[in-house]
Length: 145
View 1 (cartoon, rainbow, N blue to C red):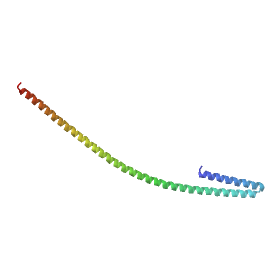
View 2 (cartoon, one colour):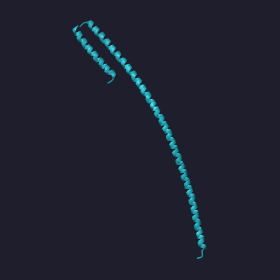
View 3 (cartoon, helix red, strand yellow):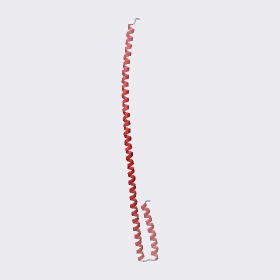
View 4 (spheres, rainbow, N blue to C red):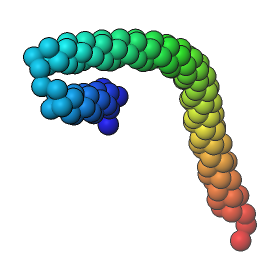
């Protein structure tokens, strides 16, 4: 239940109580002057209660607004700090990913070079084998039986 509702209820209870007492007095002494005095007192009291509630409501609203602005400022400052940390982290992560990419590229190049060298070695071995086969084939032909 809001503060204004509570104050409104209190105001109503006070007003009702004053009215009930005034009715008792009026019933005891029913004169136009007493009725006029009661109305004046009731009007003044109502005006004063309303003014106090309005003042309190204004002060309360101003204080809540001040507290909100203070908290909002602090939260925004923290959010900026966190964003700066996130940005730094992102930059570092990008550097690391770039280094990993460079290493991967180098490894791919080394692997390709090894394959090429292996193919060259394999071709040399094949050539040697063919040469040996030819040599033994010639040597067998030249051997007396």
